[in-house]
Length: 549
Image (cartoon, rainbow, N blue to C red; front, side, top):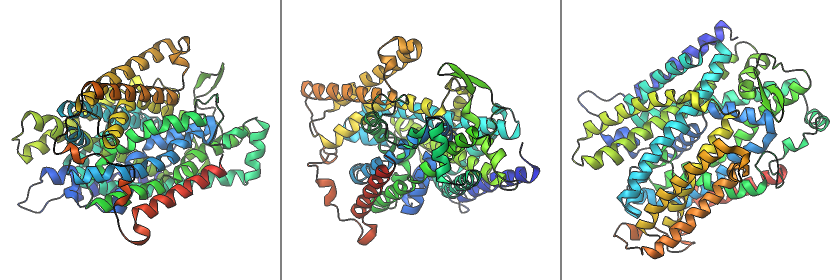
């Protein structure tokens, strides 16, 4: 259990973040909050804040807990979700942001309407709200609840309701400005906390040779590899990663409102681009400070330096083993000295609160701009902000109600990725074809979104009910994402010839006329140029993959 000084540090941190969030949303006497200020921070965000906020919105308590769990169970392989993100952030900066910023959209469904039609906008708005509730909030709540119950002995649902109320307070009142202000602070705290637990775990082991020796003795040397052969039992072979991840990653980083909203609030296009690439560089860290500590915990467990006897047992690969969901929390209590524990708990809460805050802000934006304002176009700014706040509150309640269902997954990160793999394909398809293929028509995109989403739900249900008894159940979720994506591409291409495109004045400007056109923009001079940064990021990632191949 956590000591009294650590509890005091944790409570002080929570109060500090709530205070910062409320302070940043404070208005001058006699002024009111406009919808542009509330949802997009008045389009004043600069690249450092954008990069940190993107990272904080992505990395939640769920990532700290589940990536450590994956490191314990399967080694570094799930780190591909972090490193491959760097490549998709380059795509966001180079291919997508120019259209998002120049078209002046407030939401990504708004962009789809300009490129296609209103039906596409409505569908994406609905899917985005559902995915934000399930993926960004409910899964994060689940991870946070597990940790707080392990550390403090507080009932999971009680702790979740408290955190939901406090995070919702400053998010619902302050909007995007409050979100990015707190996210910037929380990113730094989260990274410091993750580095600390990595350091203390490493201190208990002592050397790289010791790690390799223990892994060799347990026939687990492949845990150090980021690139696995075809047929690997993890389901994340190099083929699955390099074919399946782009489908998931492009939706998540380039077409998901919760993430991209930080770039939409940029001061200008260059700030949005460089902020996205800055986040790409930060995404190098999670493999070393989120996944690697889980692997270190596995080494310590095998050498008797880490006690898992307090964890419940679950059936895995035909034998009863400790449920590894709470490994990260146990690392905090067993490997970290008193007084530092409070900092690490604060880091966990940083991830949890920033993820929830970002998702709530995107939900309120989508509900106000893409749903309510569509029905009542003359709605005043004050009413739009009111609708956004109420929607965020309802989303919090729904996410809490989903927790018992999502808790059935043995691996939180695998569960999260499995859900995304069935949601992402049609959205990735219509966005990619929309910006690269001038013949992609509105009707084709509309039907692709409908058919692709239904297909994803059907496949997901078959997989969960029949399991390995069917061919679908035996396909790894990453490859399933790729197959669903290819099906959607075929559908949209065929339908685009059946229903030929009829460009509007807006849509004619929202696709690249050639593959080299995105690189014609000059950008900032020197090292801050987006092309220079993109090339540097690619070089670093290729080198890292070579080392950990």
